[in-house]
Structures are given as structure tokens and as C-alpha cells.
Length: 124
Image 1 (cartoon, rainbow, N blue to C red):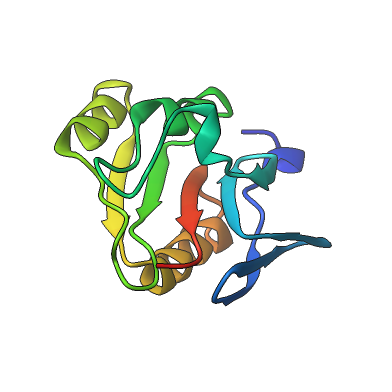
Image 2: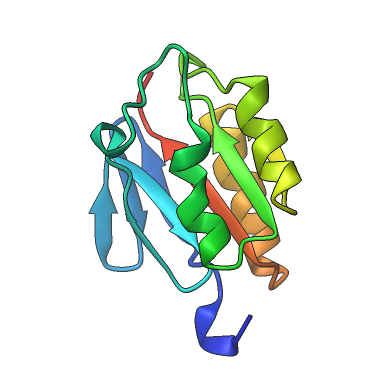
């Protein structure tokens, strides 16, 4: 990971809002080198069956060695075992956490200079 490709810090989280740098998102993908909106429609993601491996592939392509998968503020977003297993098979560690805990963990790893990525759902 190059110095200019550090994982961006999540500066604010509240219901329906995440601030990353000078950008605001509802749901976000964070990865070494940047962040963007997480559009569930791109992969057909929904609360059930939950986050798909296809959602995380972009993070791995950007060099994430750890992928944080959030389950929502109220933990309604599922993360199938198949998603975690596929991330680990691709060579990264997967951690599944409630969104507030997920943001804390992501920021902790990013602050250590780790190549961390995350999928963050800021509502239910």
C-alpha cells in the first residue's frame, strides 16, 4: 500500500449519515485510497440474505487486507457465512460487527496504517 493510498477515516456516523473527508454518504464502501457510496442495487444486496461477496470485491481490488462488514445500527443487515468465507479465501480477514462498533474498529485499523476496507450500512 502506498502512502497516498491509506484508508480514509470515518469522521462522523449517525442514522443515515456518514462523513468521510469532505463527502457525505448514507451507506459507504471504504478502501485503501478512497471511499464511495455503497449502492446495494449494483449487486442486488438486501437485508436478507445480506451482504454479498460481490460488494466486497472492490475493497480487495484496492488492497484491503482486513474487511469490516457492518450489520447496521439495529443489526438488520445479514452477512452470510459464504461472504465471510469468500473474503478469507481471497486472502483477507473478515470481521462482522454492528455498525457503530464496525466504524470504531475500521478507524482503529486505519489509524494504525493497516490496509483496511469496509462496507458500512448507516441505518437499520
